[in-house]
Image: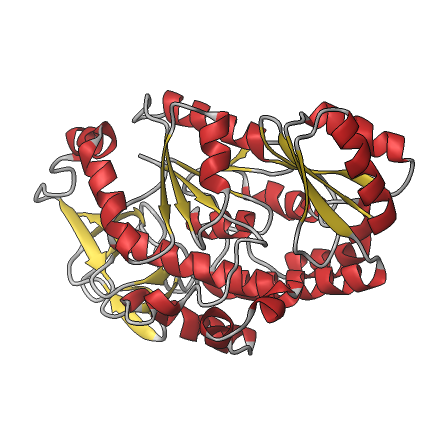
Length: 402
């Protein structure tokens, strides 16, 4: 199965949500707007480039757009082997892996955007993309600039981003040209992200992280900070805090995702899905893993291309061979959601794996509607994480008949 990737700030663009307005997954936008107390539909449909450049707007809009796309892909029954996200996209990856519930994720990203906006206003900075130069020479250019400028993103072979205070960053860009950079491009962002200039944002983000519930991950997520796969939910609060002022090790993350796909149950295929506003992730992956197959899903029309790409290769075929009829035996039972909404497991009443379940027992709720088992059995496990958005008819629990 594929690796899911999610873009970060900078991939947003005016009108990026227009094509999704008639798709069932657009309901994610209404839910997110209510939680954030913001008109997110305006950001996705009507906002101009200048409004979307503001960090507080760019992050929330990009994140919700990625969740709309993720919801649409999940409706097709496509699941990842592993996930990763570029900067802000790491939060989308954690939602996809079940580590953070929908409500908490919206609140957390909104708080992150506000904190980073304030940090950028306290410490004005800029970011500059360099092409044709490796990350070590980019670091040398920053050191020779002798000031507040650092390597911020390692995106692909011979492609990286430096960031810092404007005079020193511009000076480092000129030095990078002397060291072999073929292109120096100032990015349309409002701060020096992933550098020490973001330090003022950390206390506010840490507080928000402390108030966020992290759940066991369904699949590993490769972290920006160390480019390693993390499956322990306890790792993520510190990783997300450190990410604010640490370089995004994206090239190394892509290589690790490729390794995971090779060694996993459906090993052998480098198939990446880029989910969210159309951005540069596809080019970064293709430069890093030339043999990779990458499908970008940015509009509803792209869903057909994703299904066709999967059906034409071995990932879905292998999945069918491994799982054909797995839940069709008469001893297996699925409890499904009666409606669309947020699934919540009620610890005081809801059985745990291994517990007996009687007909009519409460399994959880979906947006306040009770989900009760229509048959008796033994609970083998939940198929939806607390806070996850589910659809009507989607399985939420798995029982074995007694």
